[in-house]
Length: 183
Image 1 (cartoon, rainbow, N blue to C red):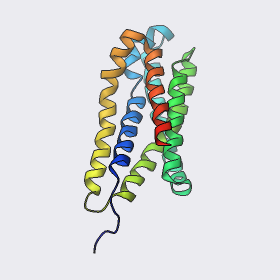
Image 2 (image 1 turned 180 degrees about the vertical axis):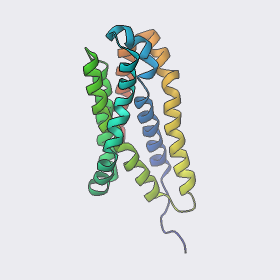
Image 3 (image 1 turned 45 degrees about the vertical axis):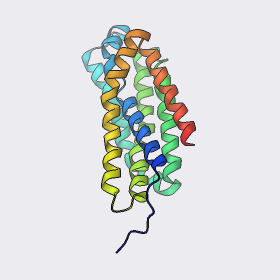
């Protein structure tokens, strides 16, 4: 039996991959600056651990809701909305005047992050012919790991030069520009 799906357009495959890279870059952006956050907010290692977990905690809890919304509203709407929320909340994290604000913004960032995997894996699976689904899903997964890896290579040096707040603002502006691009 043949697969009637024509194939995933390359532009869409690369657009989704860039988004996955950015999503993982954002979700991994605070650990590279923990050494700068600790004295500025007088944080204990326990507080740094809580801060590092906040985004993943809320993203994990909201995955089922994001999957439901992806099915009901459409993958694209949820994907773009999530990337926008994630980008804006990361920008706001750079404005945080206190630890409690950082936690709040990271919890909200988790909402944006939670939308990405249900929406984009659904899109990749739906648009990929059976013959290339594995390759497309592997490329998509690779881009997420690349974003996590780049967080230390990008955020660390950028923070050393411009400060942790500016580094968050810069990557956030890239994410906002990306949201407009995929719109």
